[in-house]
Image (cartoon, rainbow, N blue to C red; front, side, top):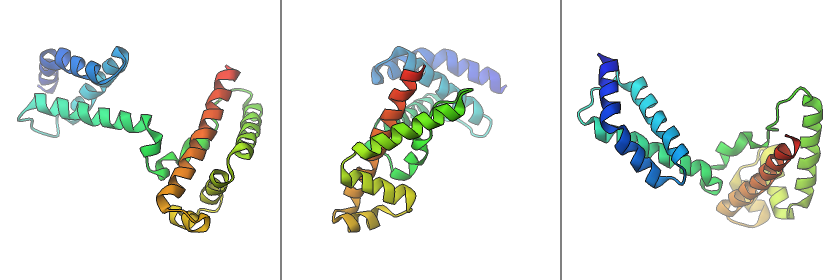
Length: 169
């Protein structure tokens, strides 16, 4: 029964939902991926809820996924705590030690090239576990500005790791 309902909803609304997502995104491929994610989420929750308006529910899932995707694309708007894992070397390979050493060298150079306030804010945050408020107080700036310093430093470090990853492959 659940599969029949799912298949019916897919046939009824897939084209319209894909069109909506395509208009919202720059890429038809991204829209197709997001559309499949919508139906995957529907399939995983369909047995748990009774849908009075399945079309509205599908579009609500789609809008929520769009919001999530836009948040991922705008790191300066994301809370600093969600960026915690970014300084992990993205490259997993048989030469793991060499890759890690290369990542560490690149991060060391990147940190050395950062403006003093950005570098210090990142070090205090990541190494000493200081809060944005404490960092802001030490630097004589607002808590929000301290968060921006940390985010900018993380973004630059991640960009360097990403470029390193592209150069290695």
